[in-house]
Image (tube, rainbow, N blue to C red; front, side):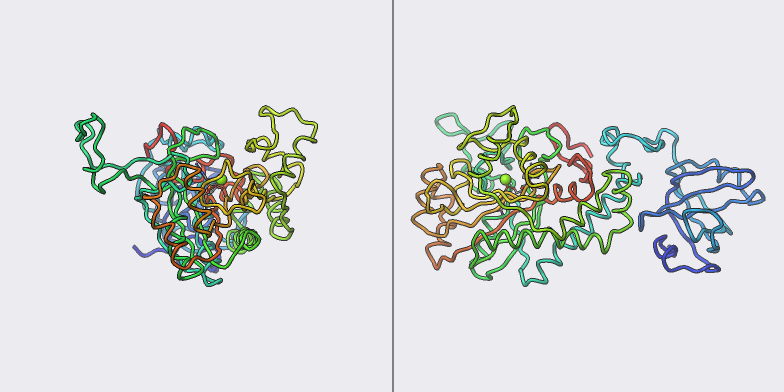
Length: 461
Ligand code: 4AD
Ligand code: MG
């Protein structure tokens, strides 16, 4: 179908241009004898205003259409007399492509995000969700731009895997066995050796370990893919399916890792300023007041750095009453993380060198033998958006840590080989894509930045 996208019409069109546009009605109203229709096709935040004069043929039927109905309009662009737009459309013909039943869940402006989660298939029609998904697409492009410009090679880590990278036991299991009637061994237990892969397999929780394979020959790589965690978390920051960006690079330590992460976050923000100005203005005005100024400051200022040990001191001296008491050796909880980044640092903050006891086996052990060379990047409101570390590249230390943490040397023999056959110091991190989206849009729930969120009890849409 020949048509002009609304973005093109509004940004490049001139009064007098003949165009056909198509889209969904945002609003219809009648004032005196003139009808006004706002039509949007998602190519940009703004809608085109269509003036329907009193004498327009078929006017009654057209103005009976409601928000959500789909129209194709042929006409002439004219300079707008009204406020809020420079061009509008004087129609020659209007065709109704799809009427909208009045039971549509996105009729009323101001419908709550929570309500719209129950209508996830319709919510992209709203201004907010249209903007979310345009920003999401642009952010994804900016990820690739950043790494490509720096010579990182993109790789696709597998989704089906036998390694539980984070060791948190939160893998979704994948099986081709008949689960109603699985083969059993003489001990009565399910015989997984008869399953498709000859052993237990699951959906990846992180593409890191496989990215390390490629980093040990191409030096600088990254993976950007879906990851899955079967955690029973119903917080606004956890999803069972989310996307992660994981660079992995050789000849690097934790300091290099931090520098890359900081440059990366700043690049993403600057890219959005350049390419998503209209959508960001909307989020600034309607979702998080002051968002633009906050992001501008983040793009320019240095991020803070603090060790876990120092962070615990800060928390102990804060004079706060914590729901979860904090002392050295206790993991930081959301309340602690938020205090550190929002009130103590008042900016993004790297917390580094955590006790090794609550971190996975692959992290580089510091000389103090108590802590590992890792980092969590905390940002105000969202909390942790990046987790990363220098990797343990010394074979003996790695094997010792695997033993200590109960990680199977058989399952990970290939991972140890990467150290056995020409090891190199290396580091990497993972940025939670949806958490970054929450940060740059002001959206407060991870379910509102995913097209079809996967959370406990919900995989409907
Ligand atoms: O800190 P995590 O668990 O680190 C890893 O998986 C490492 N293997 C990454 C690496 O070094 N290559 O997860 C990394 C990030 C977190 O900081 C968070 O932003 C996001 O992934 N994340 C989640 N996002 C949404 N829902 C969840 N359930 C998440 N779990 C982690
Ligand atoms: Mg983490």
